[in-house]
Image (cartoon, rainbow over all chains, first blue to last red; front, side, top):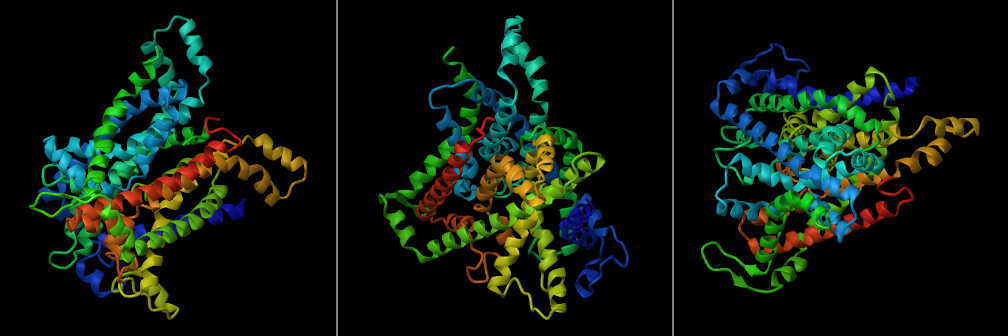
Length: 265
Length: 285
């Protein structure tokens, strides 16, 4: 038992060394970063953070990212819940093929779709909007969420549906008051993955935004280059970009634990 | 009544046709034409495909990609299972461990790039200083092996936690009685793992294998930000290759290589997918 917790602790330490390095870099002055090698900042400075918070570009791109990520989570769940129900409860012509076709989109490399997305969204007049990014991210989030939810739903016996109908429940009421609460952990896990993949995605978000909906991940890459690399600034932007993710895991951790206890991800 | 499944699938089908089907048709359309900015595309049939297949750079990128994905899976899956076995099964430590494991997964790709640039940069990084102690001259921007291994290390660092989470979910689903039975039978720790734990993990591990295969095959931002695909072509993986061609507006060529790329991923994933479906415990179990 002891050996296990030592291994686990060692793993977590290794996992967090690079992150620790970024955090302390963000608190150093540019001079200290370049001219010395210190495991802890000699003099902690919040100058880099101040620069980000006072910059309109950084602030708006943070808001852009959060907007389209949340929009994507909502869109994905609204479409995925009924679809997963159909796959888990009914047999219909071509269901296996359709399921696999959906999954192939999870495999599609985003680089492949860069150009057609740009052209399509120009044509639909939604280029450079939050909606466009949320829509594009459905490409990989929707199949994954259907897959996850289908697993959870199939774990719930069909008899529950049948009993409810015999008891005179209409479908919408049954779905809302009996079925949804039963798969709540699944929805939590699904939402977690949607948030994750949409928040971290770079290629498509970069290709279909210009200024209005420019996400923070793109602003970050712009920060590289120009007048030499501002490592401290980049590091602090990185730290700030991680925070929403940490908050999300923290809030869904109970759902995750429950979802994992059910043995389905 | 027959229409009901389709009614439920309608939102999905609408979303997927806009974000997947139409763009895919567009890519296929590009792949059959020679396109130059400013002039009308000319239909050339399968010429682009022939060009792509005959291109040593494309074949190099594909081979590099396969090597990368294979190595990533060989490291991440066993390591992930090993760590999952060390995870606490109940109590307050579970929540904490899950949160810690979730954090690397939630770091945006380009921040991963930043984290590792800071970590591996030859003038300010930790790794070069560390390896210099052992007399090894580490340089991502000059040495091909260093660059490849660094991208692999980043992938292992970033995505092993996902495998841990999946394997952990599988472990949690194994009833304690199985282990008690094994103990009564006097099975060794290894035999218990081999004949009780591993078979039960099979479906969840195949899922992990599939997700990691698909995603490692799409690796893009890490080489873009850390090595720029170099030195030479040492870290030019498939996505980077295709994106370069698309950015150079060689749409016909980019389209054809995309389709071949997609085809390889789908075929390989299909084989794995069949493997799940045929497993003794049904996929829906």
